[in-house]
Image (tube, rainbow, N blue to C red):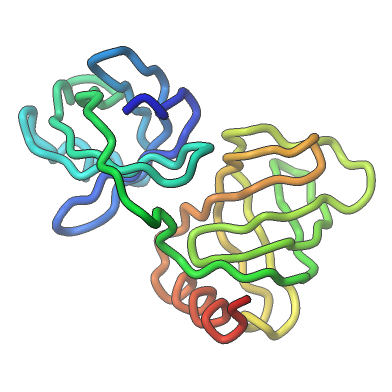
Length: 192
C-alpha cells in the first residue's frame, strides 16, 4: 500500500472484532504495527500466515488491502505490505457538520474545544484559546457536553491529524458499541 505511513491508524478486521494499532514502520514488502494494549490478547491469537483484511487511515482517506501476517512473535505485528483495494467511497461512517462544546483531556490537562464535524469513527475539532497544541498519536479522552449525545458522553480517541496546531482530528478508539451507536444515531439524524 503506497499510501501507508508511520503514525497512521490500522484496523485489522477479524471474524470476531476490529483490532486497532498504529503503523510504526513501512517498508516495500512489510508494515510493522504497534497494537494497543487492550487488544494484546486478540493480536497474539492471530497466526502467522493468516489472511487479514486491513484498513489504514491515510491522508487520502481509508484505504483497504488484503494482507498476510508475517510475524507475531514480539510486541509488534508485521504484516505484508500489499496493494490497495480500490473503492469509490472509503468513508465508513456518516459525517455531519456540527458545532458542539467539548473538552479534551490530555494527561492532566483539560482543554476546551468546539467540534467542526462528527462521525461514529471520529471528530474534527478546534481548540478554544491558546492551549498547548496536541500532537499526532496523542491518546486523549473527549467529553461531549449537553444532551445531544446523552448526558456528558466521554470517548477515548487518538489524534490522527493536525491542521496548524489548532484544528485536530481525533479517531475514536473506544470499543463501546453503545457509545458508537449514540454518535452514529446523532449523525444520521443530523446528516448534512
